[in-house]
Structures are given as C-alpha cells and as structure tokens.
Image (cartoon, rainbow, N blue to C red; front, side, top):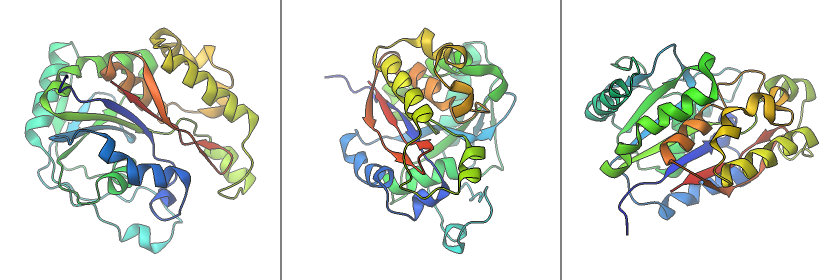
Length: 261
C-alpha cells in the first residue's frame, strides 16, 4: 500500500458554514478520519490572490476576517494552527524547479477559505498549515500544472487541498435573498454535474477548457478565483477524482468536494 497522501478540493461556502448546520458542514466535521493523518497541510485558497505563487511562511499565522456584515461570533473565532516555514520553502523550491517564480512570504494570516474548513476538519489546530496563492488571471490550465509540480509533497506527508467553491455567483445570491435550503437552480446543477463527470473521468483537458466548454460556466463563476483551487487539487492529484460530497447552499452554491488519490 502506498503512503502517498491524497489531495482534496473543498467548497468552503459562506463564512456561515462555520456556524450554521448544513450538509456541507456535517461532511467537513466528519471526513478527516477517512484520511491519513498529515504531517502538514498545503492549501490553495480562493481568498489569497496574487500575481505569483506565494506561500505563507509565518511560524504563527494570525487570523484574517476577510468579510463583513456577519455575526460577531465569526469575528471571534480563532484557528491557532502553526505555520511551517520549512514546507513553504520546500514547495517554493519545487515550483521554481518547474519554472514558476514562487516565493515564501510572511505577514499574511489565515483567511476564511482556510480556517473555515480546517476548523471543522481539524478542530485541534495541531497540524501545520501553509497557504498558497491563486493566480486568478492565469486560468485553469495554469493551476493544473501548478498543482502537478507539487506532487512530490504527497510522498512527504503533506495533504494538498484546494479550497474554493464549485459554484460562486454572489451577485445572484445577494439579489435573490435566498434561504439556506432554497431550491437548487438548474443552471447551477447542470454546471456541477458536468464538472463531476469530467473530474471522475480524469479529463484534465476539459477542466482546463471549462470556461468555454462547461454549461453556464460564466454564470457560475463571474470571476475564477473560487474555481481555480479545483484544477490545482486535480493537478496535484495526478488523475481522476471522486466526488465525496455533494450538496447545495442557498440554491446557488454547490458545496461539492473531491478526492484525488
């Protein structure tokens, strides 16, 4: 049996996932025992956008509350996991060897794309966490290759995670005033099912071309930052994935999760 770690794509949804009961929250709270225990976690978060691949290298990352208009308990949450400068440097070296201008950086805390899912999965906060930025303007093919360059970390005990949202149209969410259990929109479901079929078939080219090939791609992702952690996780996983969770919040946010072995 291989000791290689899997990779994951997680839909972190609204910050309220940390407070409200939902199918996605229940999944996140109970999935970690299905995984080997990681030595460290490297997470590509949709809320860390930069023109280059930057990797957080603080020993004790602070918190970022990168949202507004939410209940006070969210702003009181902490996730005191340590960072790992060594993993940040190692990942940067792998990326530079593959031709990327990657750099460790300090002074950036955990954003909610990181601390919301990890607080639910690993509440003890005892596993070191490094964040990697997404390069939103470079698209899906770039992130497939970026993830692929980091595959050696899987043999070193590192759990590679992409944290985004399978669908993410906040304009429609705000306009609709929808409740958590609102009816699922067909244009959201059609996109999610197309992605599931392509990921489970290992069709990396389709994922690279999703912007023009997938139904309702631009409606579900007016901007790409929340989708790109999926091709990142797929690239690091090196092949077909398995959908390990499917649910919808507010009828607009597909909360799908994938595992790549």
